[in-house]
Image (cartoon, rainbow, N blue to C red; front, side):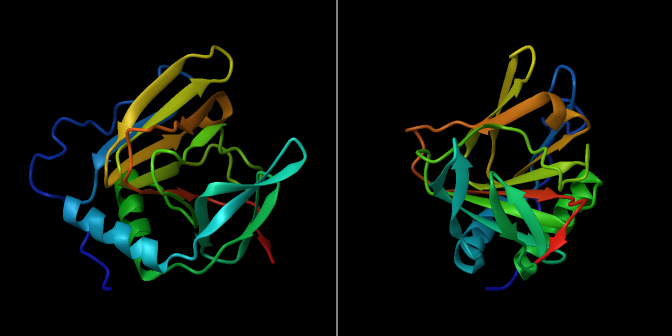
Length: 215
């Protein structure tokens, strides 16, 4: 399957979305660009990534026990980074053609550069992600993290670590969300489970590794 063109669906689609608006009230910066892919291109990328990515079920360590999650994950990057996440070591695979194209698009839209991408595949709304922060020591502190969504629309939530205040928004198919500044220091985020969604979703979080280990 060839790499689709990265185009918008038509003029004015993003007129109601201002990507310069901070979606957090304080202690961080989160901007939402809305759909940056036309609907047909988003569907093509969803299908391509489902077929070509080396998916595997995630393994995390909770309370000293190793747990295999329902969702599937994959890790890609500029070099074979060693990335410790939830007590498990992941090694980055080389970029695919589709991932390189999406990386270029995300960098153009966000104004940031990235050297790796963590992908999550959620088969349906019964699969989600609990509260956490992307603050691992291997990541560049305060560097932007760009989240590209493909497939089913899902609710995405933020919770302040001290005040407990929450913020939520719907991530649309083909949309881009950027978390920057001190967001990971002060806020957690989650993808709540829901029985209302039966379709799959792929989330790509483009990141910048600071201290990578070649394995």
